[in-house]
Length: 427
Image: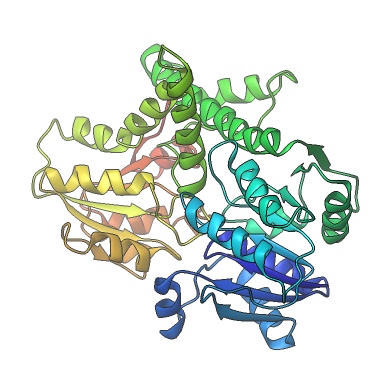
């Protein structure tokens, strides 16, 4: 089939790559001038493990091509995917109107992957049908997980399909057939239900994370190791193991924006603040937990000291720092006159752009270089290369061998046996 994908998102790149890999002829249309500039400089929009090579392979094969949207439909197509940035509802409406009103182009189905308020897909559907009653639109909420985006798209545990047209459902099922072979994971529902289900999933995941962070804080005052408690909780089949890891908060453009969308909807319809508002407050507070431990260890005398950060991306496997806990930590350290160095396998360029004009930040290509002369090492993002460091080397190069483990990936007793000071989350 001929497929067009609109958008400058990771979801758009993954969708375009996956569809091309399974034999379709795909055109990926970018809409933002910033994307044009970035590609002109030779920088990819997204750098994800596994995705980079697959994307390049599809471009080389000719099944995937790229272009920039100039305001008109891009030619005959069997399906159009709208994978725009959250908040680009006006652009989504403009694209839908343009696609439905074109007489020279065909559009088998419009697939809306753009995250927006509940009811957004219905608005797009109404726009399309007012122009062409034969047009049909489905909602396919973006459920990919950054850091492992291609895998979660092509081997999904669940696919939410908002659909009110049998023909549209059949075509989308055919497009998704290569990713739906182990068992049928497509759940068909209304447009509105699909959008709300996606947001509700994000809400409960965020709630589990913040709940565990509250329990970690309490466990420290009770002399209890939260990791032991976590394993006991996860063994209960009513609870399960997922998203029970306490840490220094969650970030990223997806989970945070989804929870905010739910909070906005609750505030519009409920007189009292909801649970999710408290979840977000807990998360923002948790982003500074490592700074508070650093402050307490040095009894507030931190001006002029140096802190090394290992991991600044909002999660492993991605270069993005959107709403990352590391940003709030850095701002807190800057406010107290602390020197900051940072290492990350992928996110240093994005961090450097964020830091411009904000404060002084030393970016290091080697993690041990970042730790040189540091009064504390903060582990913020649990990249695999950080899991088994050379403890004796760290002890030699650091001025104060204080390890602040924001993801509880180290064994406290072992670290202490190496002659370093260990502080974790709830341990």
